[in-house]
Length: 127
Image 1 (cartoon, rainbow, N blue to C red):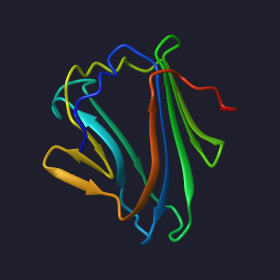
Image 2: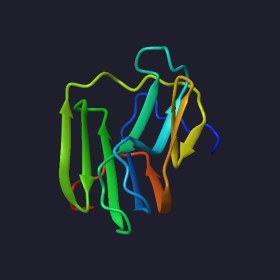
Image 3: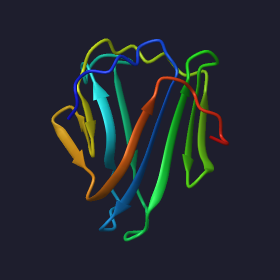
Image 4: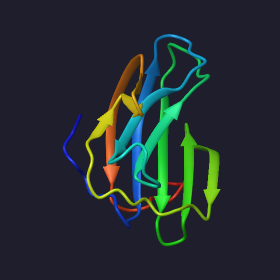
């Protein structure tokens, strides 16, 4: 885990490379930050499932605060987009890389994670 990084009311981009070493049908936690797991809009979880094992994947999650949009890219291809999202309202909480804890359940990533970067801006799709 890493100390608190304030992502409240700001755009941000999370990028990383992952290499799952086993197949899993449940969620792999790869990035999370949570202030209160029972509070509204105060947790952020980035999880994956159903990836081929022994393969590198580039993951990029972009949150654009100004237009209220979330986009997930996998290997530079847009995988999902969510518009009109609620603002990320966390004001404290530890960042976990390679895990996400929802309530009492902790989902850990089983594999390698490399080159994790957090930018305090919404990067474009070509970046």
